[in-house]
Length: 337
Picture 1 (spheres, rainbow, N blue to C red):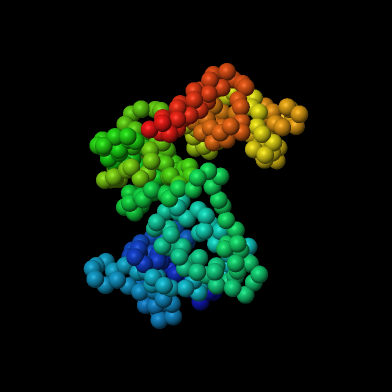
Picture 2 (cartoon, rainbow, N blue to C red):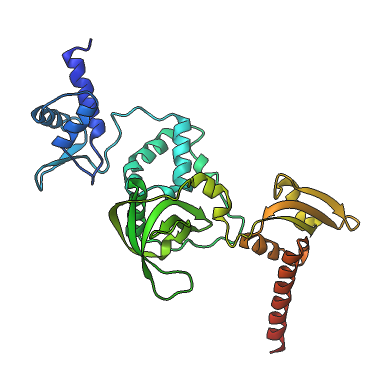
């Protein structure tokens, strides 16, 4: 059975954990409710006494500009009442900040700032202190500067996703000069290269769409709950055909690459069923693989220029042939002028 002093100590630790970091605030009534959920039945007066006592030892403060007063951890407060991070936890946090910070909601980024700082300090005396600076993820295609996304737009979209509610926003489609107002059911966010997309449905339609986040404006959160298409699973969507551009189904690709251009495919295959053989007296490598026929595949193949020839399927071969022919004509026309 816990003694009264132990009970008070555990209650005060729970109170500290329930106080948000500035600029968020928690009133005494909200803290009482949180403590009640954790099994502590206390009066508002007891919580007020605890808070004033704790404020003498910890970096918590009350915003007295308006009633009811709200309590917060100070902006730069350290996590002195929290257990220390292990080196593995610290490395994971630093890698997350370096590589996936664009997926962290803005309010969580502010709240996690002291945690990241604690992780960095904890690694200073270890051999892992520079790990996040000695690892990198480079794009396999042309590196582009990410389009600017309004912090207000990002924050409201992230809030809508977290709360499971709809948003109303102006959206300008690619190639259009004007925007139109949409009622959007947010389903998730994905990153493709430098661009962030909101996966969603609009109005009462069931087809899942991808809206470029940087083309959203005047985002407003609505009270209505979002509606998901029947059977929709975001992970399955991301791993399936839903994320491809201009997808027209899977095909059996047969293509011959020069040895220099195709050698990397022997180490990083296009698919699990890929096969290959050396042809044309060792000059080329013929690769056969089942792949998704979409815009990315065509852009990728076109990027090899004369170093690849597609044999199958005939329709893809004809498409690439036409594009190469058109490009050659454009270059010829420039030279003749």
